[in-house]
Structure formats: structure tokens, C-alpha cells
Length: 187
Image (tube, one colour):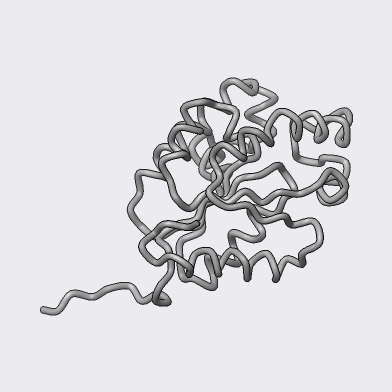
């Protein structure tokens, strides 16, 4: 009996991993790119939530950030071990763990969705549902940006500056990156 293979558009990388601060568009863009490419979409925060049977905010409130980061690291390792074509939206803080950065550095399709402070502040608003933004969203975003940008730069194979791009334009650039190297490597 002939084997049956899942149909997907030709010449598309096997996976893209989206990194960047909260509000950069990782989940929104990732879902749309997955739809265009036919890849599975994985939102790493949802993987953590499903494993914990708690929302991210509840994990932070009941177990603390350290526990959340451990769960996040486990979810990242398990997701990267999967062999299917995927678009992965990571949490904004996935890069704070050196082990996670080591895993991401082995991947060729890590894309940093880089957004400026004004864009991030507009998108996250008062930080509803985002545990790290509880008191001072803009101040916290500014601090996180200073701490994490060097880490995003360390793991990213590509950068898309999203400030002046529509959601559709970001998706087009991500699809172009995925299509530029069908062997799974994104430059």
C-alpha cells in the first residue's frame, strides 16, 4: 500500500521559532504563518498551561515565577523534540534561562520579532493577564527590554522589526523567511 504523506506547500522550512517581548506579535503572527504553511502552531504558554492545568497568571500567583520558568523550560525541550513541521510562539521570557538559550541556539529558524517600547505598551495596555506587568506596564516593559534584548540577539538567526509593519506584512516576512530555505534552515 502506498504511503500517505501530509500535504503542505513546497519549499517551506520545517519550523520557525518566534521570540520577543510580550506584545511583539509572536502568537498572532505565528498562528497566521502556520495557517499559510500548513504547519502545526504551538504556543509555548498554552503548552505550559495544559501541563499545569492552570493559566500562566495562576502559576505565577500560586507557584511563583521560578516554577513557571521550570515548566516553560520543560515545555520548550519537549516541543523542540517533536519532529513535525511547527511554528512555535515562545513566551517573552524563554530566553532568560541559559539552558533554553542553548536549545534555541541549536535551531536555525529562530526569529526575533523586535518591537519598540511604544508599540509594546500600546499592545499590552494595562497588562491584563500578564503577571509581570501588574504594577507599572511601561516601566516593566522598559526594564525587560534592556535585560532581554541581548538575549534575543544571541539566539536569533533573523530579526523582523515590527513597529511600522502591519500584521499581514509581518506574516509575509515570516513566510518569506520560511520559504527562503526549505531544508529547515532560516537565515
